[in-house]
Image 1 (cartoon, one colour):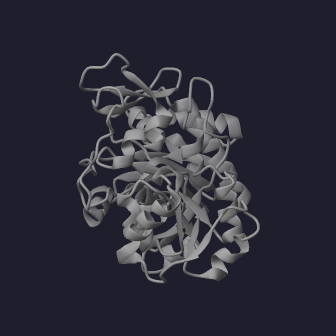
Image 2 (tube, rainbow, N blue to C red; image 1 turned 45 degrees about the vertical axis):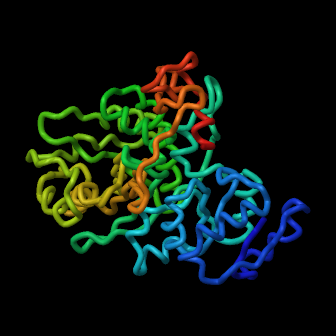
Image 3 (spheres, helix red, strand yellow; image 1 turned 180 degrees about the vertical axis):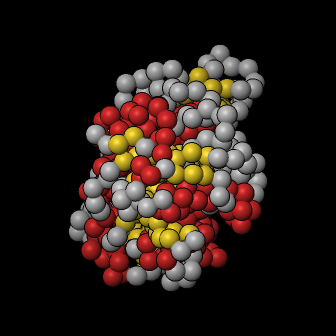
Length: 365
């Protein structure tokens, strides 16, 4: 069933989807009744939320749906929205981005699996990954007189977000902060992202990363080494260093984060005249990455492009966190990443004879 408010956006799908598909005109302004609209539609077709996607050109509706276990599709030009008055809505990214109805059709047909980083890091079972390609998105950020392009491969859901329970990319990023088990996988994802940047814009000369604070482990350096070896780029890890230890950014607001890292980095002459790609895992407010990018530009770089695995997503403020119950014992399920990169759900409380549940059960729930 397709419920639409603008036939010009959705009409081209008629005749190109399954003959049994229904097209129903809905209200033009649904923001405050969106949950009731979805419930009514699902009751009409006896459908489940995990089988359903809501397509809209209004990011506020996407935000309103963060409290529902339903797929979301933004139809339109995301870049123009970000340049306008709604940049904070990037913290409520939809599951898919589509330019028009034809793109929606590709999503309906499962030709588009999702965001690149999420698809490439999601393992269905012992030997099968979810897919081998996906979407990425980008936006411009102004910082101290410079304009930087930020490329994101997906979304990051922290432990306070409901989607954390089944989101493999988020768990792999979390795990990478403690060990090196995800380095090869992340290097593969970054290879695709960096190649896309080069294909869209201009030749990349070298790659670096947001450096660690003094006396801390440089967990991104091995990834940069792998990436530069695969792509035949200059390894500029030593060309950017953190000169002063600063408090962790967690818990600080945007302005405090910016002040916290100001003038804490130094770049070398090695970046002069070069197009440099700056890597990081998660983009929150961008303060650290953008301060690093500015430092590189001030040393004479031709251009700096920021590339991250994921963009941080805000948890719904109006819904209490709901845990995922085990179907066998009603204990709380927790996503685990195995040594072979596989993923499964494990019971952390309660008694059960079957303590492991296939990951895709939680994904649908």
